[in-house]
Length: 294
Image (cartoon, rainbow, N blue to C red; front, side, top):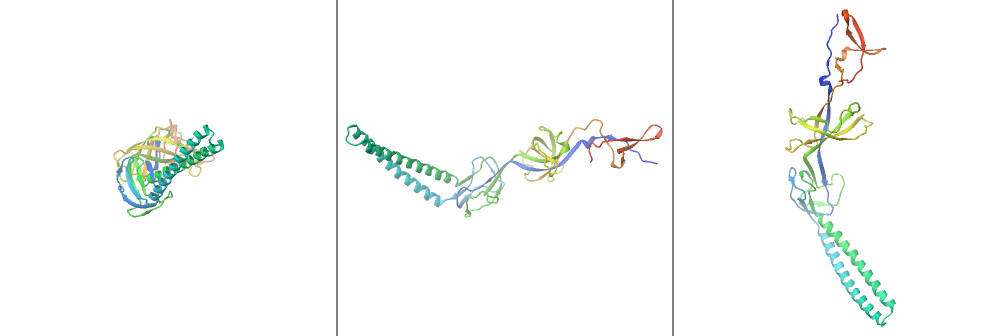
């Protein structure tokens, strides 16, 4: 006596369920470019900000004095250059009447060129310090939400760019990226434009539509999978970046693919076979090939 089952169509076997992680479409950690003390901050975590909005301001007394000194030095150099220009012009006039030698006139012209170069160098220094002074205001690079604030009023702020030294982190969450590692055997079916169903643990029963945007076009040798990037709309703000998600791809089933229980498979020297009931209730062994092992 044997138990028999009827092979079913692939059906749900064509679906591919994979874990993924949700990330903000754009994320920018904001660092200090000048040193000083934090004077004030205007945006806390969860605050929606606009592009160019001032998030905080840094007091920079040392930089302010350096800027004043540079401007004073520039004014002195400009005055010296103006005097040198007047002198060179007068000596050129005297040269026309042979009252002075050409060597002396050339020396005055060279002195003017040298002092004008000093003016240009000091002017560039003033512009550099003025640009640094502009970094005393921490501004949002794009519209989004402040997801981290790592400073407070009176805190000593140093110039930095290393991990953990950011003052704020701004993320654009109106649209999110979803990263999924697709096994090598299915990379041919997951192409740009393919839609997938996205679910997250914090909102059970709610589905979101994600669309494949791009892929790494290379197999990771350690995992045997390819990184695929999807995009999902989050204009209502229900999805949270940094979280886990389940991504389901409805892949087209291969023609002639059937679903059978694993216990129906026979492994032997002749390969992988399945025992079927033939004519006259006779057992017939047929070779099969596994399209997908669930």
